[in-house]
Image (cartoon, rainbow, N blue to C red; front, side, top):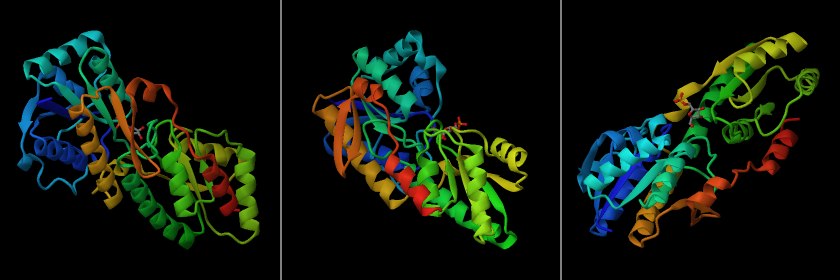
Length: 319
Ligand code: F6P
């Protein structure tokens, strides 16, 4: 393989830049040309493709976002959109593609692979919801952003003796909420993987107050409901007054942590190795600190599983 492409797609995540850097540098190290596809699959369809050199990825390792920009592209879900993408790849002589992104990005990579264009998926999302890896690029940075916010909210919650509801991202996955709740000492963590009982939430709050707890933090994963809806329901059921904080897109930005930079560098480089070895249609990941790769079709059929032991532990530690 002498020419490969790289794109980022879907919601951005901190660490995508170091992943792009790793792809470009690893490929050039092996005398393979690299083309950057700007704007995800939308850019692929429109042919927004430029050759990348060693210097193109200088000074990005510490930056959040993605220098290649990203997009959500409904057109690429259609066979016509995919065909247009393939024509662009052919026109540029690109023989293989590294796709950095989440679930939707992997689906695009699978479609291209099935139509003869070898792709390797690199998991980049703050949601940590990609099967075939224990952790995704961006999760650690987003988690630290949430913890920073939570610690600050805790200060004011303590001063005012208030209960706070904090809504965090994660789409349908509860990872960000669970890890943040555990690391930030939240009293209650609501995740989509587990039904919640309002009476039980209220009971925990009441018992805490009886023991002298003056403030409480409730984390609500967006996959459960909005923080505002939850606060309203709680008020209706118990008359508990709360303040709501919706962390929103700040969770997607910021300089990637050291851990995300290392992960991104390892996974990006491994994706290039696989393409050079002629192994397209793979999804790379990390398990027990070892790089792994799975058939991308299989990876998409698997289900990401939340660590239920952590759910149990979070309850035991927040009594
Ligand atoms: O997948 C990443 C994510 O940030 C989710 O956590 C969230 O639900 C979604 O993207 C938000 O998407 P958008 O940026 O398109 O509003």
